[in-house]
Length: 355
Image (cartoon, rainbow, N blue to C red; front, side, top):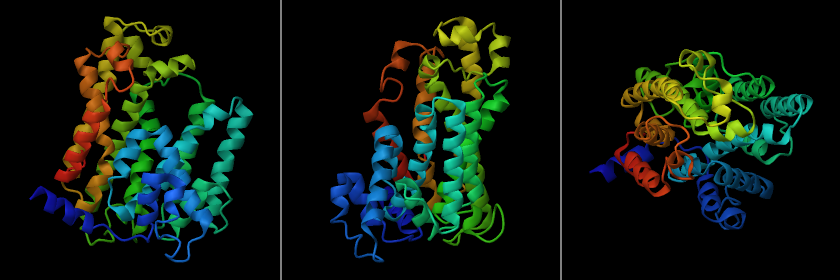
């Protein structure tokens, strides 16, 4: 029964292109496999386009393995566009690793802004992720503002090294990155945004009602905040090595925690209370998203799979007494064990609940 339901969900997905063979082959065998994927005969695709999508798959696999696992389980026709968007997220997230000065940050971010604009003008620069995005744009009119907002949010974060002043500032960062990405994924599936005529809550390409589309968009907004906040919590120790603190300053002050305590990985009752406050906010957004996903179009629900890892991490953090620096939380795969994650992911996709 569940298997039949999942099959109907997958069949309801809008057909974007014959990219299905490309994405599936790239995900399983890299660039070499794409040569036998049948993509070359589809719409006369060029080798550089096959290589571009293969590059996207490999970037996500290397830098965002949890996303790689769930994207490979999407309906085949959605894998290529979602891999392109996820690779865009990876590339912009890596700007800080390559740009070691304010000037270089400004230059790299401006390059990405210009590259996005050039995609919409039909003259994308020869960069694999941009090449893939330009191909996606030929099938779905993704909202340019959302792509630009991801770049601008990354830029502001890299240029302002100060601790977020409040939870609202943390949520703003999460919305500008994970939130925009989730909204773009819906658009790539033909649900909401600029993939339709009008504004939020319009019809989708699969005939879903405006109420269902609105529920999907609202769920994406909440889940984006949850996933973004969880991502910052998960990265606390690594950020400390870069002298960055993302726990809100007002919450830390309220519990007698200083920035140096976070940087030093110093556990204390106050630290745990501050972490609890941030985690509780993420959990509220996660719960709100879960309720809304139930009313979203069935075709949209697999795109909310990032909520699986976020929920697992918050559960592990609670089990650790909200001690971010517990060895079990810091160990690779400790908070989100790979096997358990894969099983929960498969179960969520099979049930059609998203997460």
